[in-house]
Length: 637
Image (cartoon, rainbow, N blue to C red; front, side, top):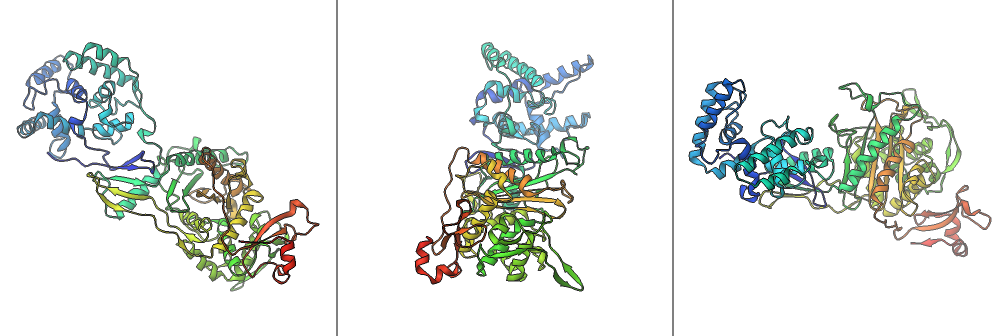
C-alpha cells in the first residue's frame, strides 16, 4: 500500500506543539494504537458491511439503486472504494459520477482486498482521508479539533470525527458544531444498532457537549515563525513538508502569545488616536492591504534563540514576514552603534557636544543640514543626554568625528548585513536594513560586546527519533570592548528612565533593568523601539508597507515602546530579573547631570548620577589628584 506523505510536527522549547509543516497535515498512526471504537465509528456510518464484502458492497449498491428510483439518491462506496479513490485520484476521479468510473473503482477495490487485510485497509483509510483545513488522517484531525492524539479520543469525539467524511466542509466541528452534533449522535445510534457499543454508552456519549480546542490545537499562533523554520529546514536539506519529521525550536509560547497580543493591541491603539486618518484594519475594503502594519521579534541575548516573532498584523491577510524580509530605515534606533564607535574613540558619555545647526558639504554643491524631530536645538549637551533625548545633530557630529567609514564598518561588526551608505544621514538611520539584523545588533550591548546570531531550530529528528539535523547554540562572538558596550547600554537606560522611551516604565517596574532606543524616520513613516533586559532583547516596528506618515508627530516612544512594555510586562509577570554588572576595568564617579562635571558638595541630589569611563578617559582631576580621587568616591571595577 502506498504510504501517503506526512507532515512534520514543530515543537516549542517547552515541548508543546506549535504547528505542522506540509501541504497535507498528516501523521500516520497504527490502528492497533487506537481505541477499538474509533475504527468502529467509521465502519458503522460509512460501511456497515465492511467486514463481509470483498471491497464492493452488492447489498449496499442494490439499496442505493432502490433509493435512487424513489428520488433519494445516495452513494454506495465502501471504505475500500473510498480509500482507492483517495490514494489514486489520477486514476479514479471521485467527482466523476459516470458508471465507468464506478466500475474502475470497484475493480481497484476488489484488487486491494486481495492483497491487504481488513485491518490494513481500515488503517490506511483512517490515515488517508481529509478532515478539512488541510488536515488529513485521524491523528491530525484529533490533534487539531480536540488537542490530543487519536489514541486519547473519547467515544463522543471519535463519533464526531466519523461524522465528517460525508462532507468535511459541511460537517466541520469548528464552524458547524450543532450540525456535527446531530450527525455524531446518528453515528452513535448506528454503533449501538450494530452492537459495537451498548445503548447506554451511546446515550451517555450523546449527552457530552461537542467542544473543540482553540488555535487548532496548537499552544500558540506562530505562523510567521513556522515559515522561517520551514525555510531553514529545507535549506539544511530536510524535506519537512513530506517527511514526517519532528522539529524542535526556540519558541517560547508564553512570550509569543504576549507578543501577538501586544502588537495587535498596540496597532489598534494607534488607529484609535484622534489624528489617525488612514483606513483602519477593521474597516478595510476586501482585499486591501493598505493598513497599518507592525512587526516584533524577541531574542535570548545569551544564545540568540528567537523566543517570539510576529512578522505582521495578521498572517491570514498577509504572510509577508516584515521581520525577516522587510527592509526599513531604523531612524534613531541606529544611533547606539554611532555612540559605541565614539566611546571607543575615547569620547566619554559626559562629553559636551553642541546641539546646534550645522551644515556638511556633500560635494557637487550639495549641503546636508540635519535637524531634530522637534525642530529645536538645545545648545551644549552631554552625549548621555543627547542619546536620551535623541538629538540627531549630535549623532551626526559624532559620526563625522570618528569617520562615516568607521560607522559603516562598525555596523557590519554588529551583524548588519545590509549596506550602510557612507553618508552623514546614515548616522541617524537613513540606510534601510532588516529588522532582525537590527535587533541582533543590540545583543552586542546586552552581551557586553559579543554578538550572537539568531537561532530558530535546535534539532530535527526523523520518524525513528534519529537526529538528522542539529544546530547547537554558537558562542557569542566578541566584536567590541565589553566596557564600551556597558557604557552605551547604561546610556540607553537613560532613554527608558528619563528620555524618549519613558512609556516603557508604565508597564515595567524600576526593579527590572531596561535599556533601549527609540527610532522615528522622516515624515513619521516608521517608528521603532529596540530594547533589552538581562533576559530578552526585542524590537518593535510600526509602519505601512508602502511608507507614508502614520500620524503627524508619530514617534517610536509613544507608539512602539508601549508595545515592548506590554509584552515584557507579561513576560515578567511570574518571574524576576537579574541585574547588569559592570565589567572589570571601568572607572565610575558621581557627576552633575547638567554640567557633566564631577559632583561636589553643592550639587543637588536630583542632579547627581553615576557615570562610567574607560581608563584614561576619566575626568582630569581623577587622573592627577589621588586625594580628589578618594574624596569624590570613584569606583574601580
